[in-house]
Length: 180
Image (cartoon, rainbow, N blue to C red; front, side, top):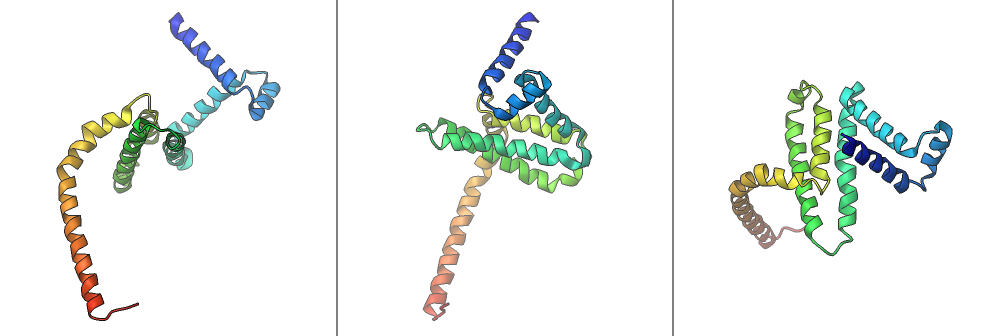
């Protein structure tokens, strides 16, 4: 137990160090006489509490905000790196996030009745968004990849046929004198 307490205290010290130059947190620290790490932990706790309680439907927007902002930050950082490892992880995240969004859109009436759905969704999004957890890769490998491996060749074949038909129709229209 003492090890966890020390780890937590070290994490708080790390937050204090990381946000040492933040003027807003400095003002709050001066007014409240609390270390800035306590303020950060408190704000995060309130954020999750609002999602958990979901007063006025705010849980949905806060959950989607987390699901968009954190991966966007990592994506912008990944664009500036030379390796493709982080790109792969983030592309996997965005595939999982998109898949979840589509499923959620069509089942929103059912999800409305699931208690604390937005809280669990937020935790799940954090799990798949933060690269060190590797959650996006796991979800993709176990759930989405088997589905896409089965149906992607069919979609690719049909899209090729469709492209040929569109091209033929365009050529026919052009040959018959159609112009804009």
